[in-house]
Length: 431
Ligand SMILES: *Cc1c(COP(=O)(O)O)cnc(C)c1O
Image (cartoon, rainbow, N blue to C red; front, side, top):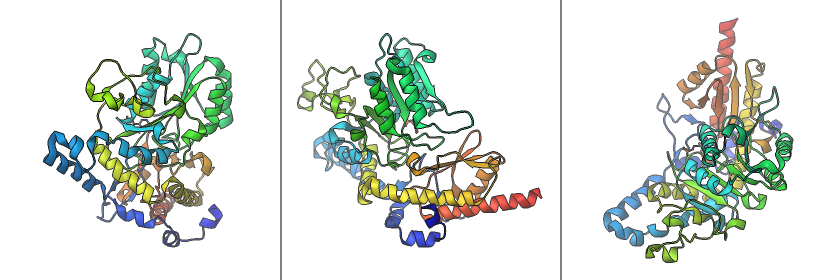
């Protein structure tokens, strides 16, 4: 694959790209020279779809025109607004519609799901997570352990790579799960680690977790809109994700949650409840006694956040128009392979620069994390000055995420050439 890509020019690859036209559907921020930047930060905040503004304006107009009656009279029917997102969101993660709901924001959903799916009992009380997880996940899990009166240091088990390695081996994860055995209540791992870009084998982890009687969930913040997933078929118990990274739905945008179908008709499951998760046929009777809706919708708390949801709807439409995750992933693998080829062509010693993201395309999404041992910050600033927007993570990692909806092979070429210039200038300076 890599060998095939190397001789082709970026222009040829862009000309052959069936998704090339989707770049025009987004606002590309200008670089220092006023020309569109090469944006590699879709893993942090995806770009604005041009359709987003009109989608929000439509709701402003409905509010202006109908006031409270907008709940029923707005063309988008606010009462059931979240329903209009369910099917498209379910397609993104490979789920049945009853398994998915769009609501709240990510860390809130993480807590709601952990309340139901981390239920430590006497001897089965541990929760397994990846070491170096995104801080919000660390804090959420730590506070969930405390909620149950447990010492986080006892209850939380972290997976760490072998000495000298940056990422986790699936076999080591499976072995750890087997070792924890019936002390393990729940597994909560990122679908893709935000720092290394490693994509985990969610099917294998779920199987291993179920084999010891644990519940298995994933934080898909860096996986949703990035990987092709089959949460239902993989038998995952629960998951949540945000919409503002690879799903381009705006800063602080709404979140998605997944609860496997086997829990769809379990009103007995402990949960934190609110009126929007109540049986809609009697929601407005304002009666006592919570009766959850079937499926993930039964975890809703509040009435729909129309404005962020309007952006999300516009964005999900683009994913569908592009042919869904299979089509996006096809291009994504090519883009990332091209980037990898250009970085490897620098032929720098690993004491200077290393790609810490796995080389196996099945173990990564679009992101490559480049560990720069010397002058990393300087390199990052050099890229920024040329209109190349990457992302810096302390102490010395540059993350580059070419995303298939709006990045071109030309963008990748641009960063490859800038890297080559930086390191050749540096050689001159050093010699
Ligand atoms: C981006 C990200 C978050 C952010 O959480 P919010 O609640 O949306 O602020 C949490 N967890 C992971 C793994 C992330 O990548």
